[in-house]
Image 1 (cartoon, helix red, strand yellow):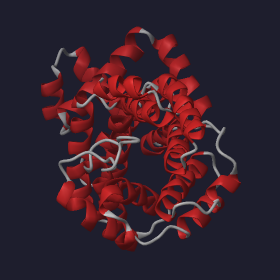
Image 2 (cartoon, one colour):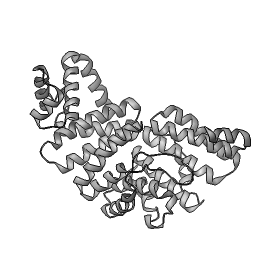
Image 3 (cartoon, helix red, strand yellow):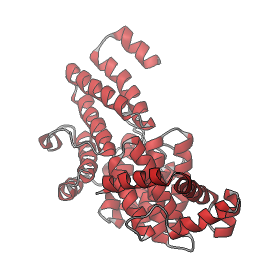
Image 4 (cartoon, helix red, strand yellow):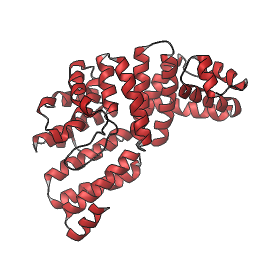
Amino acid sequence: MPIAAAAERIKSPLARWHAVRSQAAIALGCGRFAEAETLGRRVEALARQAGHEGALLPSLGFLLSLRAMTGDETAVRDEVLEAHGDAMAMASLRAVGAVWKLTTGRRDEALRLYRTLPPLASVPGFVLLPAAGGTADLAAEFGDAETSAQAYRMLSPYADLFVCGGAGIVAVSGSVRLPLGVAATTMGRYEDAVRHLRAAVDINEKAGMRPYAITATYRLADALTRRNRTGDRLEAAALAVLAASRAGDLGMLSLARKAQELASSLAGRAKGPLSRREREVAELVRQGLTNRQIAATAYISERTAETHAAHSRQARVHQPRADRRLGRLREESR
C-alpha cells in the first residue's frame, strides 16, 4: 500500500506505525482476529518505540476492541485506563475499556467507566462517529435512553457512512446503521431499529465486515423480539440461531453466548434439535416447497425460511452431528 511504501522510505517508527495500524484495521474489520492480534502488538511496540503517547493510546484501544470482540480477558492494566493523558484519547480508551469489561462480566466496573465519559456534545468532529457509536452500545447495555437519543441524533446525518475516525483510522466498526439501530432499540423506536439493522446486515455483509454483519444480525433479532409483531419472534429466533453459529465460528465467543441465550429463550426450550416452528418448516421442506414458497406459507421472510430449512435439513439428514453441534453451543453459552 502507498502508506507502507512511504514508511519504508522514511524509516521512522511512527511512519511504520501508520502503515501497520492500517493493516491491523483491515484485519479486524474482516474478522481475521489472529492476524489483527499480531499486527496490533506490532502497532503497540512501534508506538512505544516512537515514544508517542498520541499513537500509544489508540494502539491500546485497538487491542482492547479486539479482545472485547473475542472475549479475551488479557488486557491492559486497569491503571492505564485511569491515566491522565490527552483527555479525548483517554475518554476513547475508557469507552473501549468499558465494553471490554462488559464482555468479561465486570458490569459494575464497566458502569463506573461509562459514568466518567465526557458528554457527546464535547466530542470533536474527527472522532464523532466512533465516539457516538461506542456510546450507543454502552447506553444500550445500561438502558440509558436519553444518551441513546443523543447518539441517534448525532449519527443520523451519517447513516450511509462507516464508523471510523477522521484523523487516522485505527479501526472501522462497520456501517453507521448498526449503532443507529442499537440506539433506536434502546429508545423504544423499534420500527426505526429494524429498518436500520436490516440495512446494517446487508451493508456489512457486502463490505466483507463479518464481525459487524454478525453483530447486526444479533441486534436485529433483539429488536424484532422487542417489537413483537406477528412473525417477529419467529424471525428473531432464526436470526439468533444464525448469529450464534456464525459468531462461534468466527471466535466472537461473548456474542455467540448472548445470541444462543436469546435463541433458547425465544424457542422456549432447553434442548432438542428442532423447535415446533422448525418442525413445521421441515414438513414443508419434505413436501418439496422452495424457500420462497415456505416464506409465503409460513408468513416469514425468505431469509428466515432459508435458515429454518437449512436447520431442518441438517437435523433430518445428519441428526447426530446436529445434536453434537447444538450441545457444543449450549456448553459455550454457560
